[in-house]
Length: 121
Image 1 (cartoon, rainbow, N blue to C red):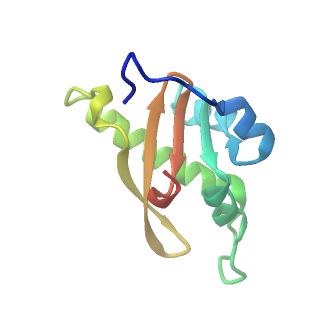
Image 2 (cartoon, one colour; image 1 turned 90 degrees about the vertical axis):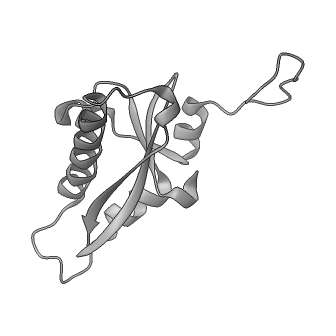
């Protein structure tokens, strides 16, 4: 948290992170899933979703991304019904990827949502 006496010496914007490949914009599919704010995922999560094991027949990137976005949406909707506040973020949720339960975070800021692994924070 910044104090009014703190000086900003550098800024790295969401747009720069998307351009650099650190974040991946998934807003169009997020909107289809019910997440109406601009939404990005980290490159780490993006690569996990892209790396589909041979034994995962019938899976594709879009379906795996949909699973992540849907579970994030359900978690946010449940918390909204309980009085979601900015102080609740980042919010942990779980999704099954490659037959393993993965814990992910969704964070919100002035630019929208970012979905990531906790270690990406």
